Structure formats: C-alpha cells, structure tokens
Image (cartoon, rainbow, N blue to C red; front, side, top):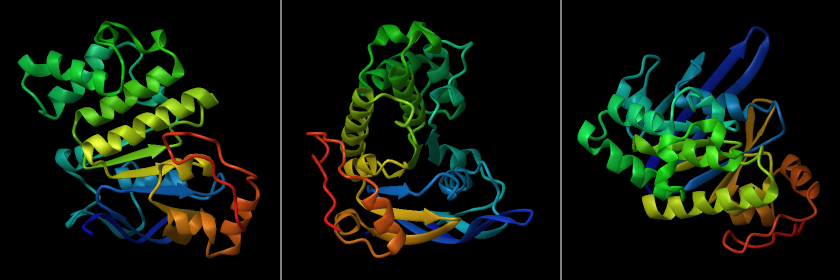
Length: 261
C-alpha cells in the first residue's frame, strides 16, 4: 500500500531534555494511525513537528515522496491540517463561522470568491451542522459543535493528511461518541489519511487501523489494531491495556472491547 507519510530518525531536543528520540514512523494512505502514550510521552510534540509547527533538530519527514524541509511552501502547509483538543485554538472568536471558512478557502485558493458561500454550506453539512451557523460566532456553540466547526475548517483546504490531537478528550461521553462517529463517516466518504492522538484506548480502539505507542519520547510499538488489543508486543503496552477494564461501547465503531491479556 502507498505511504502517505514517512518520519525518519526524527529528534527534538530542549536543552538536556530529549522530547523525541530517533522516531521512525510510516503511515499508509487512507488509513488511521492511533498514537497513544502517557502525558508527556511526546505525542503532541510529534504531531506538531509533522504539521510544521515545531522544527526538529534531526531527521526528515516525507509527505508522499516529497521531503518537507524546514521552510515549507503554502501548499505543503495546506496538505497537513491539525485539529486540536481545544477548538478555540483554530477558531478566531472575533470572526463569524462564515469568515473563518471563507478565509481558509480564499487564502489557499480552493474556490473562487463566487463559490465560497456554496462551499461553506457544503462543509457545514459534511460535519452535520445547519447552514444558519454561518452567521454565528464560536462562543454561540457548544464544545462539540465548535469541534465540528474546527473539523470543517481543517477539511476546507482539502488536506492529504489530517492530524487530530486529543479532539474528544474535552467532551463528555455522549458528545465524544458523536464526534467519533463523524470522524468514522468522514474517513469513509473522503478516503482520509488520519493521525489520531489520544490517551483513551477506547477511542483508539474505535477509530484506528494501526496503533503506535510512545513512551518517554520513543516509539516502543507499532502494531495492527487487532494485534495490539489482543496481544501487544511490549510490557509497557500490556500495562496500558491492563489499566483499562473495558472500552466504551459504540455500536457504529466496533462495539465493546475487553482485554484478553
């Protein structure tokens, strides 16, 4: 299968602290890689390096067969979009949803100005929001709705890789499930390639094709999802799984998981 992303010998150092230590990672096109690990393990740092928000000290990143250098082009930045835990990180509170979507569409020349309204309505429909939301502001929506708007904004520029960094962790359980359902449907409809970061193994079980485990800045395991949840390769992965008695139930996303180790 064709690779969407290759991370090779990536290292990030902050003084004497090694945030990422020789990370090697491949992500296949049209699949979802779930990245797990304890807080401080380096998950978000890795995501920000891939997105171009942090410059690594060593190593390289390839998007398809194109190397992403320290100074990226507008097209390269457009190709990798990131959804944050807090949607307010990507939504300007002073702009209406119409302005937020239009700005992205026009800056990256996705459509002509005459098509912005139509495309904005389509994007809201894709994340299951009504078009009347266009004239509202971020503070007028719930946390789950704001996350849907952030997803629409990320999708608006038609990225080849979507990074979701703990996008459901700030939501209550019922809203989490609806947002995961949305990611699942979008993945099928748009053939998305997705890097999905979470500390919640239930979420990872629901959304991922492959699971990668980080610990203290290193990748300690990369396995197909079914293999990881049935028989993980490392003692650390077994510890993570044994700490979770059962996974949240979601009828559309794989049902209940119960550890077998």
